[in-house]
Length: 222
Image (tube, rainbow, N blue to C red):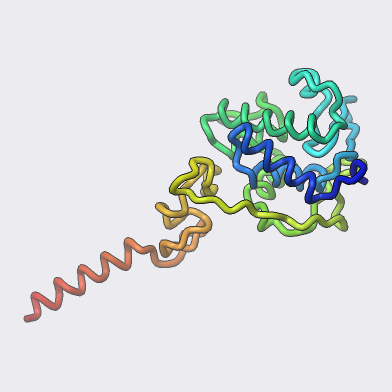
């Protein structure tokens, strides 16, 4: 269920607006909401430690207090709080999306050298960084009582942007760091010749090198 008159598209539009306000890549904010609640502002989850996660961004009750959110079940307050938290974590980790999402899922105290994300956090990070290519089915967050569920669907949306003019328009490389698909052939979404994270394919640089070698060989042959 959603608030009166609020569709998934309405919630998505609110997330995109908040992302622009706080300087967070829109697809990252949308991916968090898709994974955590399937854009459902009525979603709640009671954790084993006695805290509760609320709303679209599944804000923990401790986080709600820290951010000073009056009503975590109000979609606008919840979305603003969640996106603001993402912005804070991105700043804390120097723009490293992987670490920021890890901290969003597990808390900053669990992020750092010598540590690795648990299965829940790792799945969360993978889903969000691949959104909207993660698929239309919203996953059910482990332990969630009213989350999205495998049978829930909300059409994923992708926000087009221009990496040459928008500093927040980036891909995510295999190390979880932002990359520019217009400059880096290994960056997901790049059309420069590489095939992305698996490192296979022939890059534009490799093709250029082959062409130069061919010219030199022909010149020597003559």
